[in-house]
Image (tube, rainbow, N blue to C red):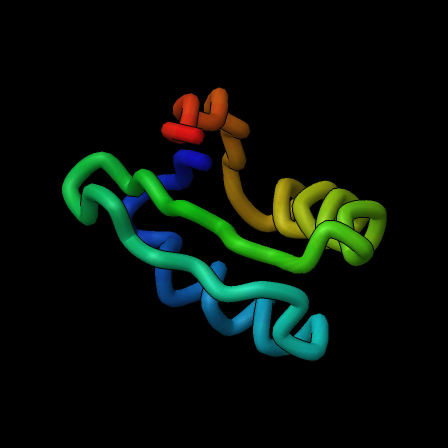
Length: 69
């Protein structure tokens, strides 16, 4: 996902407020690219969280890179 670099702290705060649905890694701090990891059974809750976060900041969902099998 991509957010404004200045919103990374806010994103962390919001994610913690949603009972830490997942964890994220900052892939590129200059471009605001994050990798959000979560349990598959929480997919609906994560989507709800992302919609709520989008009311506070611009959130762009980026395609997931293909992983080697």
